[in-house]
Length: 242
Image 1 (spheres, rainbow, N blue to C red):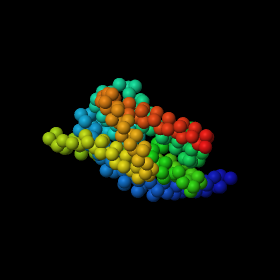
Image 2 (image 1 turned 60 degrees about the vertical axis):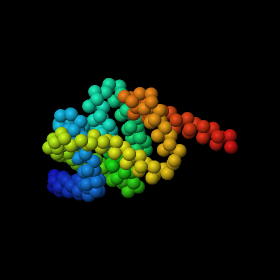
Image 3 (image 1 turned 120 degrees about the vertical axis):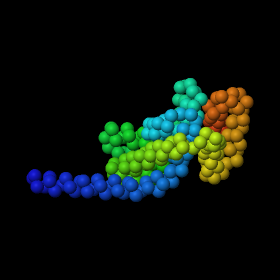
Image 4 (image 1 turned 135 degrees about the vertical axis):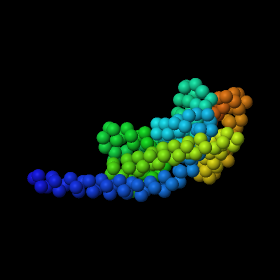
């Protein structure tokens, strides 16, 4: 009996190593692709007047992609906690729907589930929301998320180090946030190809700027969400009448 148990332990370890290696191979392209964005975030943190250590802290604790770029501006402007909380809810609300197709049932254990939920980024979702992932082990799924988490923190930290070397005479780096959201908007348009939705978003932004420039983002996103809900309700009523 003891011989069988001693033989099973190395086998389990080998299987775990293979699963970790498989997770690394799957997530490696995403880690490489995110390097420029992580470096940009690190540079932005330093150039915004925050201490360099804020960069790895945001990368490790917040770990929410575009929200981290937004959070840098909010922290630099000493925005109220309520505004930060509502902005985070609106920006990351899409993550609620990720659980529908993410293979969370394969992640056993409360601690592992808690971390997997925290590390459920857009990239992790894209890599695991596939039919093949339904049969993956917990080790492989968590390895994908953990490797990406570590890679993101390292990139952001390196970006902060590089940002501290950039002389203050260099201006315009704070435009990285605007450029990021412009690119995200273009990519979203390529997916939906909806001119009315794009026009609606632009209109909400203009109205929000007229109401309050200091709270433009919060007002614009609130108006946009309300407009989308109203349009959905009206479309549903028209469909029922037809």
